[in-house]
Amino acid sequence: MFLARTETSPATSLEARLEHADFLVLRLVDLLDRSGRDAVSPDAFQYQVVASARFVRELEHEGFEAPYLLSLIDELPLAFQTKEPWRLWTSLCCLSINLQDRERWEEVSDVLETTWHLVNDDWPEGESLGVALRLGEHYVRLDRSTDAARAYRAAVRRVGAKGRRALRLAQTALLVPGEAQRAEGRYRRLLREAARAGDRGAETDVELGLARSLLAQGRATDAAPHAWRAHQLAEHPVNAGDALLAVALFVRVDGRLSNRSASLLEPVARASPADGALERARRSGTRPFSYWRPYELRALAPVR
Image (cartoon, rainbow, N blue to C red; front, side):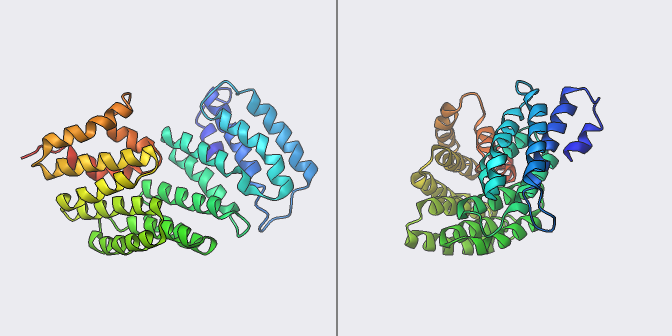
């Protein structure tokens, strides 16, 4: 996809050069996949790294993704030498987020799907889980819930109890809004399990997911306390802001407490004055756009 997009721009344009750089680096990442192909010799791999690095460094001060590409260039030799492609995940994830922020969805798919093909049983659990969840969220944005569910199922065998909870939580989110009542039951079971395990992070996400499933059933008043509980449990400021925003929107949907809604939104707005509250939540990376869209539509509706 990166190379295909260069065909629509003049060969010497900055966009075409950046797209070509993206393609070169992602091709190097793909060479780390040793399944179904002959291994690349160290000399051949190093030659391609050097040639690609020379091209990318010419763009070091141009465009948004160049720093992420340079980071990957620097990390590739060690990943190849140690046969540990998981070392690239942080840079690949950052590159995918950068592309996502500019709504270059097909390129995001290229990055995440290339990474997913590298994942095997040798990957550390955290990195393996991170790829699956990130890919699933991306598929949800593209309305490809079936592909998201497939990625979650494939990841289950590579993670422990905590990771399995995270994957079941992500799978349950796919049921909303179409099967919100079924999702509610799953969320309540997950909430009990997370509480028994003392998994506060999972409790936070489950409470917010439960709130979402209740809202999808038209039960905004029931949903708000669960979102507020998520806010109280949240250990990260971004998650706390997400939950507080949800509380405000649920109260807004309820309509009878619209003045309180404004007071709840105020600290979120103060925390990020350059962005609207919904935009901040979207860009935080913790929630896909589709997660917030139903709330936004209801929150913007007139209160009767």
